[in-house]
Length: 107
Image (cartoon, rainbow, N blue to C red; front, side):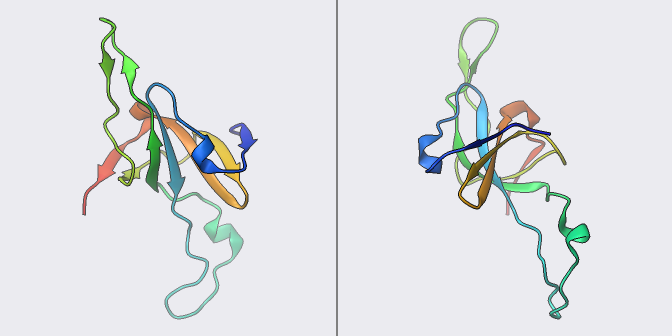
């Protein structure tokens, strides 16, 4: 299980190097027709998230900083599990490395 930290404001978290701060989409607890789904059906985290903040990038072998491939506001596809959890009140955010993000969603 990922480590959890608690902060008063998400603005106080600034990702370092190639880290990306994301907020996963919450699974629907009710269907379009009004049927409530059991918690066992909504426990699996959704693979989509919104990028909240990004670090400046990580240095490559030559020492040049390679910027992250995503920017705040992007929708991304994440692995099913992983990342470091950060709780701010009732909201939960995750820190992933840029290389762990599977894809950028463009719509």
